[in-house]
Amino acid sequence: MRTQRAAVVYNPVKVRLDRVRRAVGEQERAHGWESSRWYETSSEDSGVRAAEDALAGDPTLVIVAGGDGTVRTVAEVVHGTGAPMALLPAGTGNLLARNLGLPLNDVDDAVATAFSGATRAIDVGVAELENETGERRTHLFLVMAGIGLDAEMAENTTALAKKRLGWMAYVAPIARSVIANRLFHLDYRVDAGHVRSTRAHTVIVGNCGTLTGNMLLIPNAKVDDGLLDVVMFRPKGRLGWAGIGTRLTLHGLASRSRFGRNVLGLAPDLKALGYAQGTRFDARFDTPRGIELDGDGFGLVTRARITVRAAALDICTRADAA
Image (cartoon, rainbow, N blue to C red; front, side, top):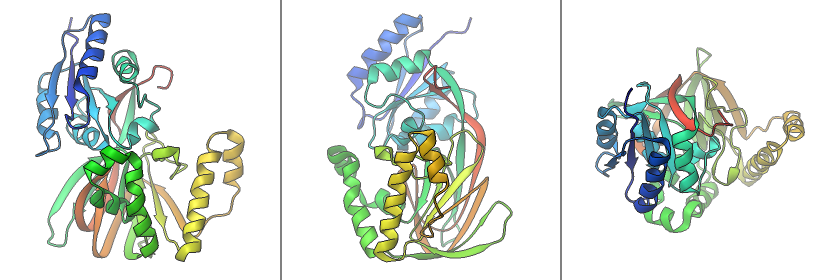
């Protein structure tokens, strides 16, 4: 029989390693697994080398202890290999874990889910990016790709502020962006549809729909439906932002019951919020725009093509949630 052994990739800045080692050791003994192998991420490559080293050891399971950025980086290496990933959330947003209903503030529960939970195949977003010099890069994301406010938050919020303030660290950049209300021009296309032009404050392409604080940004987004969901913020002044804030609040409240979801479905479309769904989103910007993937900034781009790889990553979830 194959030896059962986990590989733990951890972000030393985010993780209390003593607590994680204790919890992992307890699960190893309980399930008869060999001692796990441990791989520390480096700021130089955000954890790519650690993930590659972990995968080279042919682990039964790859446990990722860190925030959404660390999870995204490890997933770039692990996806498509058949090795399942488990999450020990230790970041500011922990959005993938939040959308999957995984334990957020309980190391013991999260580690127990990793060793004894079920496995669920989820989609992976692929962002092909081009800057103004023509240089092209390709990166994966699991939660959201954002241009506009999302990218400004990723660029202008320090790691120290996030560590001390949590999600409250984003309040100042959000307020500045809303007050300035600078819209940009883009030409875009969803799947093989017509090329359209618009002005937007923020464009988000989501694989998941829920943000920190359980705010539901994209009601129809599902992590395993083989589709991407696009939302564009197109506010006209303060009234436009008020409408967006009200609608997003209603999304969160309505999502808690079937009746609420039905009522929300009857609400008229809000012009300040535009939604679309498909498997490919192409965009071209007149001036270079910042882009973020799962909370990490990736600089300025003039073009972006975002596609989806369906069921490309196996994630450990609670047994009753798979």
